[in-house]
Length: 252
Image (cartoon, rainbow, N blue to C red):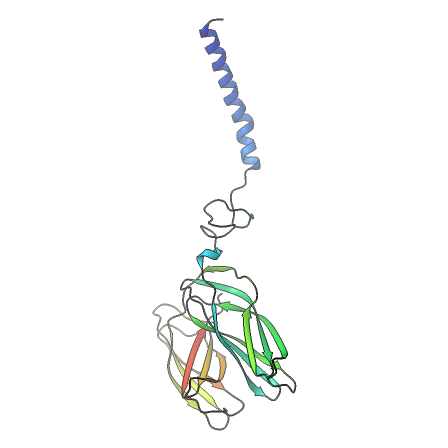
């Protein structure tokens, strides 16, 4: 058989093969191919982990550091009723989490557990913030130690710091039923802040925690000022010399 005949037959074979790919392979590809998504349980596309990083809203563990619990504390508001607060820092300046499960535990002076409370907290980006649990019933037992921990994984995402709200001055009255009035200013030029909770923490001369409270701000427009009030039902056990105000949004 001549080499020319062999080349012709080989050419026919290539044409047949190309037609087969067009008629079968291409339709099969579009039938069975699934584009990478951020919820398919695989590391694909531009992802740097399984369904995280790259173009996904969810961040991978390597993209953030865990928030640090600096302290936790509880104070009596009524006989047998306490409020608890955890003071936490998120070291990630551009990473937040919408709903992270947590656990408060209150112990008596003998180290025996009195009560525990669970909940979910918003972790704002790049700031110190408070996690508050109120109205904790302890019966006749008195808490001597309070612990706090995050108990589950968080869906971390890109976020921005709430840095334009300022507590300009605080007027604290410590006699009778204590109360504090704080003037807040929105230093932003283009953003109205809504759904923001303010926490005030009180310290004595040794910088020990004395008490704390919280309130919710009304929507505050760029450049505006707003007065907010905090109250306590009982006098403080010691004199307050320093106050600290924290602002935490909802993450919505």
